[in-house]
Length: 341
Ligand code: GZL
Image (cartoon, rainbow, N blue to C red):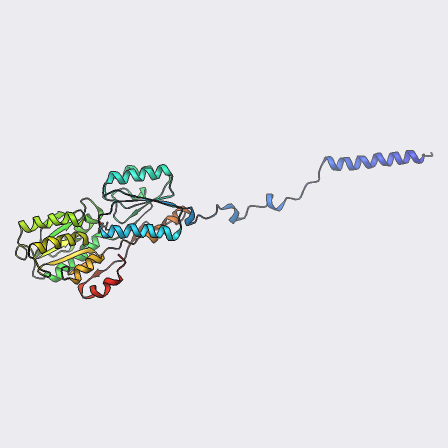
């Protein structure tokens, strides 16, 4: 059977089209592209770690009542500046809890990353801490403590206020081995600082030293003056009482003003204060204070570090206590120029 060349060519062309056409209609299985099918790498699957530049931290400061508080505020503002955080949402509650609670609520509305709360008093925080928890905004309690359940905040960082009171008591025990009587000028009523210091003082004061009276000066110089004046009207310095335990240096300086006006001289009484501010060191240099129990306000760097860890889902210690000491007049003159607050 003889095929014409033309027919043979036609058959070949048709066969060729049939082969090519199938190929294009059913693409061959493509090898998996490395980027789409391979399991994502662990780095790629994790969201990029947050940095300080991503941080909006809320610091609803309780007030500006003392040199300690001024230094605490400066520590947060300066650290925020140095770290270059996105925003420090700062406010001053003028020592009013309702103002602090409003400030926290505003920060929750703003959807800040972390709230660092320096509570003016211990009680009354449960509701707003629950609101922050429900909004998934972690809270770090700073400085003074709260009575709210620990599940409502991520951590507390501050001083051991009970230990501070115990340290003050130990000084009176040393200075008044034969006993006597002391007055107490306490801090803000209901504040973790005043409650802790009073508790610690009573834990360790010797039985032969009587706490003759106790009044609050609300941690301010101005409010301590009339309290000390009233004490001096009621009790004879040196006779009815031989010492004064004062919960912070600012009130101590106010008390000195009243003592001077009443004719009391440096050294007539045994006075122990708390904070270790420049004002307290000067009072030791001048002979008014026989000891000053340290309470460190410079908590900014640690709090920002804790906040960044929380933003990156890392765990932090639930309780961070600052290491502190007691300062005495014999070194006060040399140390005064080195004091940071
Ligand atoms: C203590 C702090 C107190 C200081 C005062 O940690 O809360 O409040 O002792 C300050 O000086 O006003």
